[in-house]
Length: 183
Length: 148
Image (cartoon, rainbow over all chains, first blue to last red; front, side, top):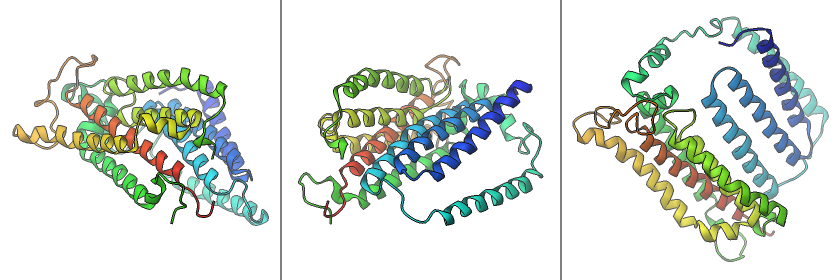
């Protein structure tokens, strides 16, 4: 665990930056700009994961949150509306209401949290100590994903497979060769 | 939709330079998934993002002529089937589903050929994820609103 004043300052700086970027994403009227700023927000979250020594999650967050999410949002925006319409006053008050609610809930929940780096469950300690004997993989996360918790990963793959099938069913008229409109 | 025709010469040149590097990083992430961070999912998404970059730069028709829709469907189904088959090998040899070391060789930890079947799982997951998102991109980009 990386301790020290520099680490704390850097971590809190990125936390504040993530909140600022999230507010910018909500407040931007041009949805294309909002999607791009959302990509930067995902990058900041990835840096936070990396600072918390979870590089696997950071890598996933970079690839999905910056690459895939931005791409899907830009494609969706290009098919629908570029600029958001609607009243602004209601949205602004809703943002602050949700912000206040989130702060209250987070402090309520965080009061009962275990200490930082002291998890309640002890199964993670077993994985870290025995992964080299059981599986022989240096990457303990990869060993957990495909060996200890193989059924979970099989379920996740099934979810992705089914989701793509549903997407193909919904957009099944889109892949015609001709120029006829979709029905 | 700009993705039907592609973009300017500058974008095409940068995409042409960047795509092999991205594929190399993806191959590293997948093949070293049991040694360093990452794995099949991350590498697969990176492969599909590389193809999306090529779609944006060169147009969807150019890319779909090289990597067809049906090839993507076959590729992702093959990946999903390979995961099941690799897991079933443990059942064949008298152990349980997802049995790893004991059926597959232990190898030398830290080298590429280690950790039993993790490499095979990562490769199959890469095939499944990359082709899945590629097919989704094709369908979403081709989709047009009625009367437009």
